[in-house]
Image (cartoon, rainbow, N blue to C red):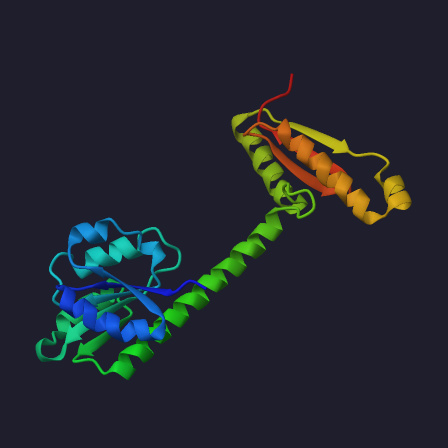
Length: 233
């Protein structure tokens, strides 16, 4: 199992080592950022949590939030490490407005910081798992699991789009309906597994002749539909 990844933006190595000593005991793997060049070279998506020292000067919190949240559906949580003696409510509010989800005051209580970090890590993991389930359901709705081609539902949406294109732009399209015959006889002689295998192989061969602009779907049983943007000659 891969270790939990924390990115720590600090001013110096000593501060990073203090935090690293706390988190490595809990099976977190910490990576240090001490300057803007290091941050620019990193892939933010590899991390599960980001900790930021309030005194970091090489990047503004709003700019960091833009980097972290720009293109990712699931946002990596950012925890702001504030100094209790120099606490600035206005700056803290700006951090929350830019996307920071939590802040902790120094000096740290070991149990508190671990508890907060575990909470945000677990919430992040739940969000990623939820997204995976949603993506899987979306794929099941658009992909026929036997032939690995488009599902009937997805092809219906494609055909509707093509029909609208034709009505508006007079763009030609071709639709071919194909049926693999005698599959029922094969099923009767050799069973459903052989029949499904034949349908799967047939779909595989059909895909070999498809162009990038074509769409193939298993319509029903051993019936397939191919849609093309251009009229076949």
